[in-house]
Image (cartoon, rainbow, N blue to C red; front, top):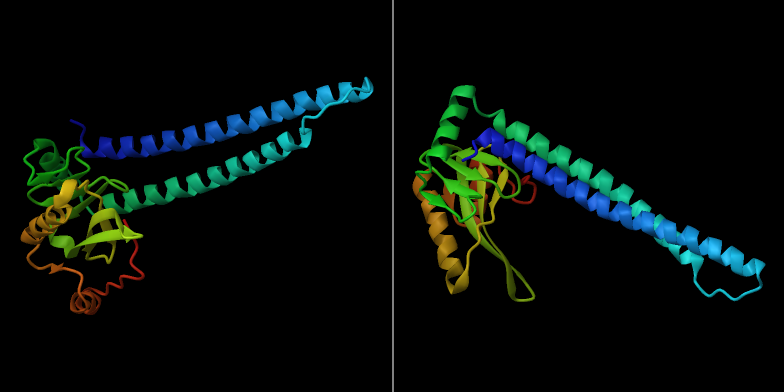
Length: 229
């Protein structure tokens, strides 16, 4: 099994490869549009010289090229900013732990003696840590968790996102996108919240007005301003 530092690197490389693939496809499409524009421009010029009709809209290919070229540049900038921001989050997360504690974190993950693990091991609970590999690789001590609740987001009455939200002492929001399935989604999510609550007896549980106010009073957490990690 991969150790945590290796998993961090593999996650970042996978995101980089996806970004490069998106850029390559977009750039290739733009170059094809440019090639077709040049090709039909040559044919158009030849048709004009021979006084023959030519009905292909040459300008459309140039417009498509410029649009795709602009999209490629925008994607390059956006994906670069995304990767840099995620890398900074990873660096900030790993900086919380000393080398001896990292050894403990790696040991608990590789032993596979989990309290909970989804099928892809993207969300893992060990004796002392919560491992979250959804948005980016993240590790939390149970003692650093101060608030946890389940949330079901709906769009036009249809459930689209069933998650568990965890807040840590640094006022950061951590989203566990565990794949709940079937008609028991809510009970599965609630069971996961209870499991986390059992490891964090000091944490606030639930999303009620009183809990929201307590999180703000005791831990300085503002749900409207908290940053996701």
